[in-house]
Amino acid sequence: MPELPEVETIKNDLLPLLTGRHILSVHLAPDPRGSRVLRRAPSPQRLCLLLRGRKILDITRRGKYLLFRLDNAGTLVIHLGMSGRLFPELAGNPLPPHTRIYFKLQGKRRLVFVDPRKFGEVFFLAGEEAEPPRLGPEPFDEDFTARRLEKILQNRKALIKAVLLDQKAIAGLGNIYSDEVLFRAGIHPLRPAASLSRQETVLLHRQIRKVLKEAIASRGTTAADRGYVDGKGLPGNFQLRLKVYQRHGRPCSVCRASIQTVRIAGRSAHFCPSCQPLPGCA
DNA sequence: CAACCGACCTGTTCGC
DNA sequence: TGCGAACAGGTCGGTT
Image (cartoon, rainbow, N blue to C red; front, side, top):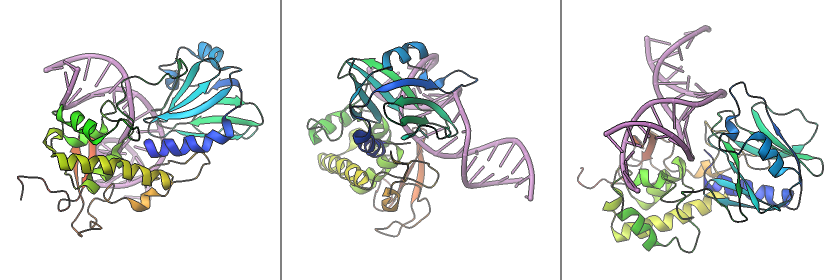
């Protein structure tokens, strides 16, 4: 569930604590069904070999992925999945429940990856600027223009909500922020992506950046049923600013209409039927 | 290839 | 009150 703002917050928290430090060793928690956390990694032994003794030069983010740049021209990649938490803590403390992997670091800390639902993943990519494949443009990159978004939407047959969730189209949006962005742009989630006007596309582009920026400033969203915490173990604040997500049946903060839910692309989409009208429907 | 759907996973919520 | 069913969702892989 951590989406772009949550991953960005964690990255910013970890950056001053971890850059310049060495990874002393890698430890995999025993798992009776095999280690799902390394399902895409080379192999536990090979990963250990690649990481042991490496210095963390920098930490960056691409979409929802955290990228640890290492001094062997390689990149340790971590995706938090639905329930993943990543935080440094003092060695010697008991490992938290659902710890999948941890890294002993230079100094008295270790970096712990906790993930109850096992959707998260750790792997290694060769290359100084390697990044996970098949990701669309980064919302804050210069080349993500309204024009580029227009091209992305025009070529799609899917609904706008489904396209916003597709990481190959745009990287970083998940269910929370796609709902919130559509609300602020006044666009119904069931609209076909290709049906948006130029004006609507420009508005959507603006709101993607605006909502993500606000959410980063609020240190992410810790929703009712979600255990997101930042790199310091603290919850975010953006849940206080949500307009539609998980507000089914409650009054819209703008027009007081009842927030509704519809199923799209296997996800629940929340929207205001009055602020986000569907053309052709009364 | 784009679109769609089931599988993965477990803590929480819902319904009888 | 209790217990099982349903739900939550990011990504992958298989199918159409």
